[in-house]
Image (cartoon, one colour):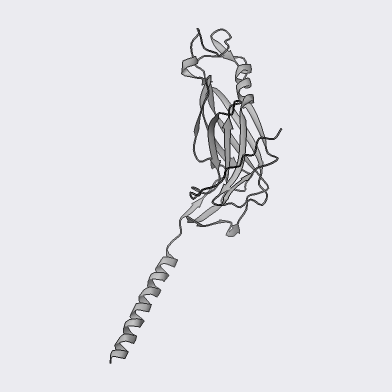
Length: 226
């Protein structure tokens, strides 16, 4: 009788484990569907001794991201589009960082300050000199480390021309073209902005993961190509 009771208990225990496992496997996985433009992780402030502003951005590549789905969470993530698995980025992706830049509050005075004035404003040439002087680095990152990006380009543009008032905020845009052939979708692109002196202004992260798991890694910089 004891043997029969033990077998019965074991059967009940095994059945319970099977039911729990079935429920876990049947639980819906977290899903997110993307559109054509994927927001860069967060906006960042740009602040130098002369100019201040905020930049935000989007990641795009034709229709590649439109309808792309991310399934799962944590380290168990997969991507699908039209019910087919997708594991890598397309051959090229575009990152657009845009915002408004103006002289910092401490510079907005007709007297003093280091910003050259034209009347009561400043010229597009002055802002162009600032934006053209900015330097960028780009690298792919994942939990195992970082990979420098080569053969990428950035176009810098300032909206309009002429002279603006000292309180005006001027639309400014940086457009990046980044080769991404063979790069896993679980990687993220990190773009960092520097002053000519080497002072870091901001870092932007673009990708289709909500976050990268924390991992100690050696940082390697890939400087902007000419």
